[in-house]
Figure 1 (spheres, rainbow, N blue to C red):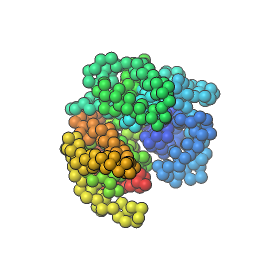
Figure 2: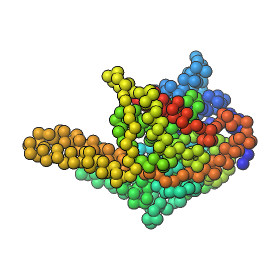
Figure 3: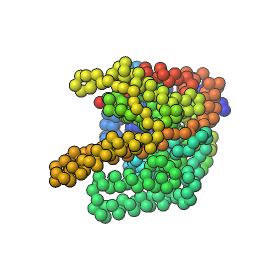
Figure 4: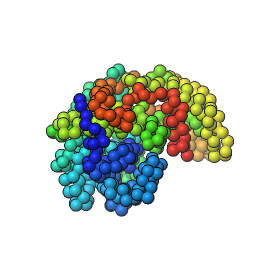
Length: 490
């Protein structure tokens, strides 16, 4: 594989980015503008009813973020003029035909001018409403593909998925496609049109029963988890992402397509500066709970590998892949992670967290430092259930009896404790597959791409995505956890 200069490729290109207000998309946009200001135009598609609202979201949710401070310092007073020249807001909805574009002139401009599409739009909630997840992650992928086929100058479509389309499979997990209708557990009958139909029927049924919106949302979350489980996926997110990949594989025709599967994405490793992160990402919820003194036990296989990759490395891989496969019909899959080449284990994360918050304790709202202790580690779901039974469920049962005896005097206390216990149990079930994960993600294709960047360009230092360069102890102790504290802790 030989690559032209990545910077030369991006120059004068028109790129459509979907899901433009998302975590990875922001980093992608910032990187392109910073390293190649001669990009012709970035069309940023995000959900909005009109251009005015989309522009407000651009300034509030994208450019206003600390992520863009390097660009603001670099461009100074020219920032607004460069932004207006290089960025075009596209109000739309990828779950609709034609990406929901209302402005016919803008639609025709994009169809005639766009060279590259990077599809980053998705819902990443593990237990998203089934109808919502199907719309964004599954049909959204198909709608982007259909739109891409109409773009007369298109050189490549990059669809960002997730490595966890492999579900709970163990062993070495290859960069193979998700085949249409093929379940993970061998259960026959997986049909995407059927899934969409029964999801819509479930919505209609719940509305006909005049269920509240809150009740409908909860029911559709449970329904998605149930449907995923039938075919061997652990949650709605990865199930609907897998079906999205199936549709792309089935309908791509001769279009050059890259499917890029990151693992668990963490804060930036180096650019535009170390440690930028947004929102509570998968493993960061544990860091937040632990640092605030609310997490006293840790449920996982401490020897299990947790496959993580910094966000800026994922973005660099996206850029390298789109250059490598421009105008090359076919589909290629890249798994971008660290489990094969530079694994880190849960026991390491536990150790880093304890040492960091011992050295730099979180100051609570009363102005007092929070003291953390080594967590009790539970290595199986059975040990966790025993703990919950002895610590909380027996108390809950006793409280229920007392509440009855005292004519429901303790109804509020009982209901509150019951709600909290159900929330914890649900959360644990959602995260369980990743706390005891036995797989590692093969990245042979990704390694070939890294070699091509290293050997056929002079831009490896700018477009780095080799996990072997990461010193995990240094990254967590000096970059990631401090980034989570700065940008996520409230």
